Image (cartoon, rainbow, N blue to C red; front, side):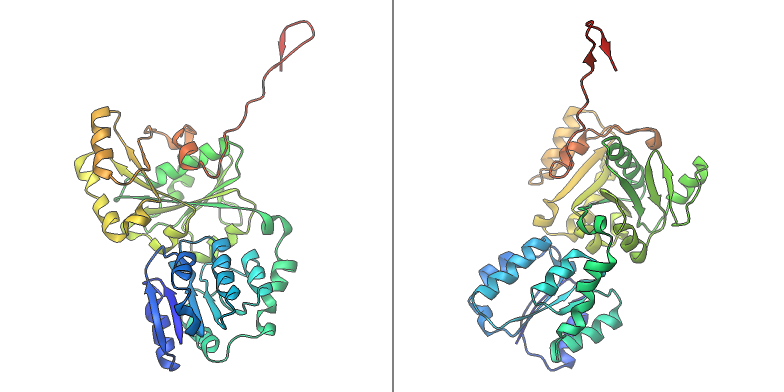
Length: 361
């Protein structure tokens, strides 16, 4: 008996493999931003009859720690359940894979290629991976991963525009400058269908480094990224990685929803606000409550109140100042509120007085 969690993207693949291997599907939950820990708690009694639980990580809103807590809650009941983790956005060297290995979870799939996932999942549900199959995750975590990268806690920020040319790239640059001004090592990755960073590089005369990025004001910019580049950048010593997804309707919404912080940029004019309907249609209210909505182009208090009223019951609403030249701007005071769980303001040192009463330094 199999119980599985899947995103709409990977559900057909998982269902097909289970059907072809003659598995009995007891239950499946399909969606984005699912809560594994809560579901395990709610269905604890019925899981006693389950043999395998398959978890597609692209479907979850839980943190890695919460996922392991969910696993532990099942094991405490002494249920003989085997977990299979499908993790397209993980890579060898991720500390979580090491944690899984030492927890005795060997059925780990980290490919994002459909054929590879299908083949590996078929093995997992029929025979299961063994200790020797998972050794690479333990060894990679210990030996191959640089120590600093293994313990570094990166914050992923996803920025998307409610419509085309809503300002996703513009505000990715401003937010990058803001973070760098607060002593945070920051990278901006372009993950949009309509790339713009290459033209920024050419306009500023910046030079590309061999690793495929250019730097401006201490922020590193990676134009036209793919999954492979994202994995490589995630292994570098950045505090924050900002992902510019461009137009929300064209974005990889699964990847966007895996970001720690999710920001939607919109204009304030009626036809610009209409673009938000696509965002509202594509996600459940519980998901939208975690988004941060930034409305540009208005200082009119009455209009701001109307927008806030229109956005109820959503609460993360901001009206940042529009800056004509994003490359010259690091002023983004709303950033402290949006990143309140991750960022503390830089404390300015007080000037010291000399023995003679004059300020120095």
